Image (cartoon, rainbow, N blue to C red):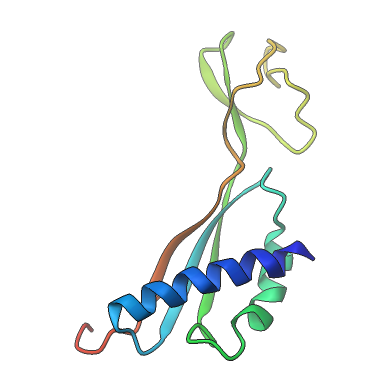
Length: 119
């Protein structure tokens, strides 16, 4: 389960941000996760309590925004969504395209920090 390792990195980054801001806790953490990132949202949610245990992030809500993978199709001159079986061709017109424009994301979108005096 590499999701636990990914989340430990997220927790480390959020802990640093919390310390810099003088936060007393973390309310929520948002992640942007692409459908071709290799990270499974269900596994991320399951590993979240373990990754945050005994940290300033413990008890924080995890919010995951799934980013649908898409390519730029030169034939359609438009972005086209693709799934995990994407075969380097546009799913609409079959024009070859290896230009993945989104879907590999794995990033912290936000962290709601409990900063004293900032309600």
